[in-house]
Every structure is written in structure tokens, then in C-alpha cells.
Length: 258
Image: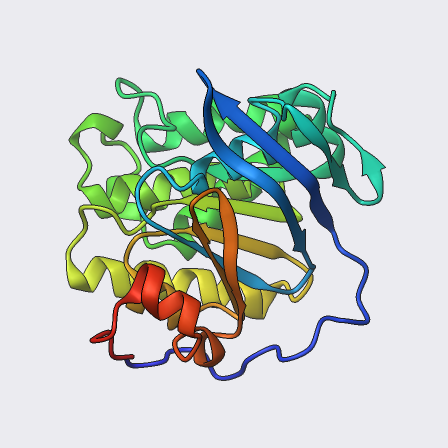
């Protein structure tokens, strides 16, 4: 596993959580999804969520953004109980950016029109909005495709577009759901570099990545956790996780190599 990070953030114990899930339990149609989950998001971290299909990774994202409410427990952002806050209020007040696994853009709008559509909502000053859009297009190397409709972009270009849309509001928390899915090796490496560069440029941002591709995820995160059977079964640095016996037996398997 080729690491592209130049550093690891080793210690967050003295930092106050930027957000947290506290004693969260949730069921769908009598099926338990999460059971007594406690999870902190600290500023400056890239955090990874791993686990088998149906383990509740995307559900944790939906709880953070306000798409669903827990049966039990509370959601805090910046020490404020936001369990009953609607999606728009969480996004606006606490600056949460979300990159969904599927979609997240307007198919029949061009790349630049997609950015303008979102920018007009969250950046009121026209000059500031245009400068931000131009900066993101340049930064992500999308200049040559900005007038192409989103439905005609490649998978990697669409993924970069949705990340740009999420970054328009300068998020404090950026949630990325399965952003490496169905992409080629070079595009995955490019996205990994984008996430690491975001952390380097903004040391206070918290980036949370939910992903199935364990090796790719562990190469960029500072901390990761593994969900299985409704519980967090292991949590820690990439090096500690791959040595954890519970993680080996319930997720990685004995033959996983970093």
C-alpha cells in the first residue's frame, strides 16, 4: 500500500470533538442497524468508515446531515444538540459538505452551471461566487470540460464536480460516501491526492470517508473505525487496525496485507 500522505495526525485526545454521535441506536423495519454507537469527529482529521454492506456506514452519514433521526441517542455539532435540526439548517449553520455515492449533480446542466446553481444559494455576493467557482474549476483541472453537460462527463470528472459543489460553502466537515466506487486506479489515486491536499490546505477541516476499498482508504486516513453487527468493533490508526484481532476476524480476514 503506497502511502501518499506525508504525515499522520497521531493524537486528538486533547481536542474537543467538532461533531459526535452519542449513544446512537437505530432500526429499520425491526432490523437493528446501529446499536449504542459513540463516534467523535475531530477537526484536522481524515477519518475512515469501513465495514461490510449493510453495516450502517451510510446511515451514520445520514444521521450527521439530518436525513434521518435516531431511535435513541443524540447528534452534536460544535457542542450543540442538533438531533432535531433539519438538513438545511445543519448545512448552513455548521457548514457540512456532502459528497453522495450516486448523483449529487444536475444531469442536464453543464459543469459550470451546476456550480452556479449551488453557488447562488450559498454565496450571495456575485463577484465572490464567480471567483470561488473559477478557483475550484482551475484547482480540480476542469477548465476544458466546464461547458459540457454533467451527464456526458467521465466518472472521475463527475466525482470531482460533486466534490467542488460540496466545497463551495467552505465546509468544516466534508462527508464522502463511497467516492472511489466504480473508478479506475488512476482516478482513485487522483481523488486520494485531492483529499490529502484539502487537509494540507485547510488543517481544520474534518474529512470523513465511507469506503469498501480498505487499502485505498487506509492509505490516506488518520483514523478509521470498523462497523460490524451494529457495533463499532475496532477503531484507531491504520497500523493499529490491521493488527486488531477483532478487525481481522470480522472484517479484514487473515490474509489481508497492507
